[in-house]
Amino acid sequence: EAAPRAPGAAAAGAPEEAGAEWQSAAPARSRRTWTPTTAKALQSQSSTTVRSRAIVQSSAFEAAFLCLIILNTLVMAIEAQYKGLDDGFQAGYPGMDTPAAEIWPWAPKFFEVAEWAFGVLFVLELLLKLAALQLSFFTELANYLDLVIVAFWLVGASGYVMPLDATFLRLVRLMRLLRLIRVAKAFAGFDALYVMIASLKASCSALVWSSVVLFVLQTMIALILQTLLEEFIQDETNKQSDRELIYRYFGTFSKATLSLFEITLANWIPVGRALTYSVSEWYLLFVLGHKFIVGFAVVTVLTGVFLQETFKVASSDNFIMVTKRERAIRTHTEKMRRLFATADTDSSGSLNREEFMGCVGAPAVKTWLAAMGLQVSDAAQLFEMIDDGDGALTAEELVKGVARMKGSARALDMAVLMEENRSLRAQLGQICTESRQILAQLNVPADRDRGQPTDPVSPVSSGFLA
Image 1 (cartoon, rainbow, N blue to C red):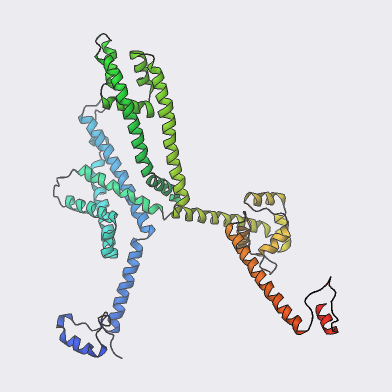
Image 2: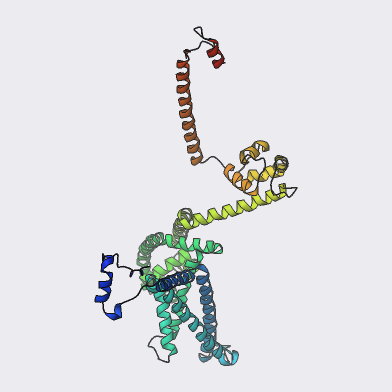
């Protein structure tokens, strides 16, 4: 048998007869003999690459290293607590009379070991991804972040002192927690997390415009209020303490804007009392009006916009819709299997008519099915509609049949019914046409008067019409 040609030779347009000449003209170092063993090795290498790619892209792989990232974050939190205790001792904060090394003597060694352990594991993850994904590794932005983090750790582990702060590099690691978004789509337990993240992403536009509207409104009011209170602050006949208090809240544009946001979103009582007690009680109307209009009405409208965006995402996101549908199917299947197990009194694995009617005909079961959207008025008729004709219901038939029967008629059901009606009418018209042709062949008139023939007919035709 002839040895297989080099891949790509046919694509290059080289004839099979010129294969030997092409090999002889090529340099010796570029020649390759394609044998069945070589082809098998290449196929094995390709299958290994596919399997390794599937492993590093699997949900289990992502979840495992996500747990590792969360664990690393917890260790970083403990290390931050340790440094906080030491900073409090060095600053002479009351009650911090002992250095952190004496409170947690095990901490320095633990942090050093944990740093090396997490670093090695993250390097291993990066190498596995590079080996499996190859050039496609560089198509995702998250992989660049992992590459930078691992590179910084390797440089620091080598003993080189980088100009960047080590604390900043540790905080950069926290950004890897964003991988939780990708893992959330793979596990059913993360549905709520994915809904929240998707909703926040969809509400970014509403957040920007809401912030612009609220900021413009607050700045306008701040300019007016600062202008009105400027005379009070400059009047030396007023108490010095009152002038300082009003200046603290409304002395500059930035102070006035911050005070208005405090009235709107935070504790509005101190600012309101400062205006009312120090300047004039008439400012009570302004404080209450601002709180009612901006604090209640405007903020409530903004909250409603965010809720609307959340519901819009929940109703239009493909992943959420599929997840909700799969969850509903699992719930329905579980309930129907429980009903099947209860009705199957002889444990035969199927329900006959008597078992089905005895269970479904019970008032409690009827109410339970009605709550699920299936109104059972005639159990026998329901059995006939669900059964496939063998007189026994299996668990699969019960699950699919009840799912098909419950709820109101859908647009698809009506469309199918209309199509079947049109098909029946077409078949009926064809039958009528064929009947007329047969009657014409038998010389029988098509018109009848109350079932009686208008013309004498033969006994054969009379028997046919009967």
